[in-house]
Image (cartoon, rainbow, N blue to C red; front, side, top):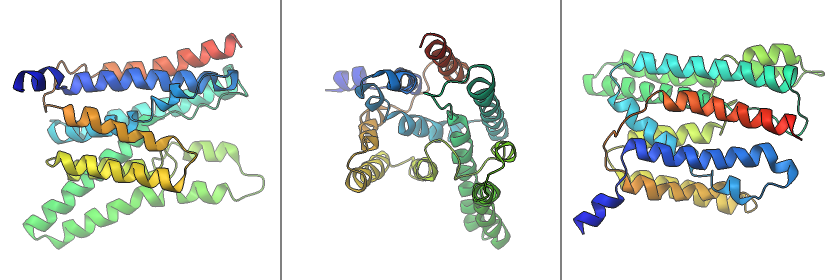
Length: 262
């Protein structure tokens, strides 16, 4: 039994590579959905966000330099926001595809809340009221930074150039996956020592998606519990920079191919 368990166990690198393959399938559907790409391609991609958030909660706990991690995620989110606009609206417009991919922005906000949580818990343990209040106020910042964008969208016509500028200010409301995904990432971090609780949270969220939006396939993210349960807590080879390169590179390559060979 132990031999079988060892063979089925996944380290962080293997789990990450499985997520990359599923993500690639999802983005093939994104680029060719208008041409009849089968729905199962994007169904395979539903567990990807929870898998990466699960890995991110582990990485954030173990990283030696949290500031460097946050800055890297922020820079990559800015880069993708700029490249999305440059490709989709200026260089190679494609009316069939909307480039809004920027998971780095979601991961940045999620890790920010992980940091705020640590500050909050430290304040409680040290009985420092000011630190507790600081953590609570910091939690409001990513929400408040979304208000200018929401206001601008109510104008007629909305100033698109100004909205695009505000998109570079990280906020919890205008990110890929939405605020629910950020909350999921935070809960993964809070309960990182209790794998069964993490899986229960994801299962409950998936069930809620299914019953509220019966036509949505998002509930299929529940299948992320399988690799989560098989995770053995080991780092593996790491390949830290692979995702930072592969994620934007494959999206823009697929977009260019889909646009030039319509």
